[in-house]
Image (cartoon, rainbow, N blue to C red; front, side):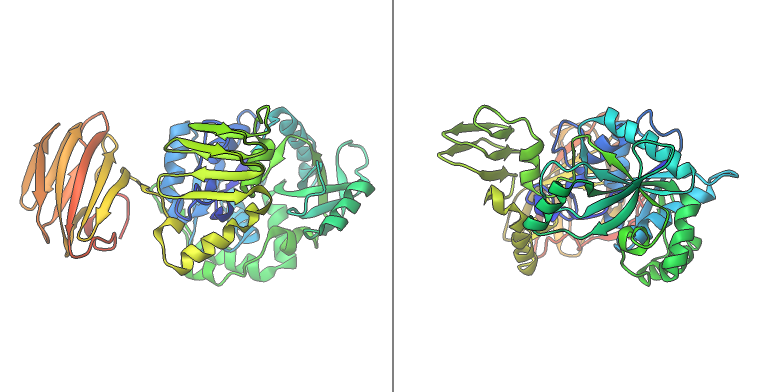
Length: 471
């Protein structure tokens, strides 16, 4: 059984912690591991096959780094040139799985990277039930046993129990996100589950059903995969072919049409963490009903979620609110209105503000930088370069740079000179001079970069050589 982890999406409802270039699946919102790493941990001891991650092109280095830090070996990191929803994404993974399989098509356990499952043992037990059905040719979806009349999820109505195996049912129908009254009716009637978006089926069975019901999606994905290219750790899909693929979910494309659908109930403390209120619901609440993360002092505050990421946050006389602090933005919202955080994100996009896409901390394949100060004609960054890593050989048309080493060793190319710098030493890179920075040591290189010039945008980089394949 192979594991397919879908790590696309922007997680806009968890702004300001989640940004389009570093969305929620790469954050540590529950425990020390990121959500992607927690998903990798969830399948430990469950799947003996390959593990693949499907992600956006712009997130590829984050996926690779987090998997490496966790100690997970990925068989493929499949890069989507554009988002086309779950049906095409899973098709790409199925083609990839079949290429490396033997005579028998592998089973695919399809999971999202941004879900929380508290009871891993219960999840494994449900997968064992689903595996029997998948081996028999069914397309299995996991239905979450509902804890409330939630209006933020779609629902699955179960049919008759599968003969010969307890805990698996036919699917009577899929239903859209209901209003409150309809959702309560489902709960009262019984036999309805939240639609988790997790699946288990054989790769060839899924592709055959997709080809039967949506041959246009199948053909576009087949063509995009046929023209793929391997790039170090990444599997690059043909962009033009994939852009021509329709945007469609697996539910609409296949699951609502097939007669092979089976649902396995799952009661395992599941959440898709669709909003800040979800983290309050699944978090450890104190005696006042608060869920606290970070350096927080509260007085006369109740039923609230308060998250401090970089500094002290204090609250007085609040009830039923969400407060989230990052190093460049603060969110304060009524807890029952956090779904509308997306409206703030839309406003930030309209104003072309950087806070919608990236944090002050920006991750690169070679390390990370933090924009600690900026003003007219200057910017100051704290740069960390991983051992053995090297920034691209580059030049800038509009800015000069001063580099001061704080710790570690820097190997610097500055025009036609190559120099070594250690702690408290510095160099100056004039405008238009070709330069490069490398960490030849075994500990991280920390330095302060002061940029000055008429234009300081990240697009003022002309790369001549880059080991990470960036243009």
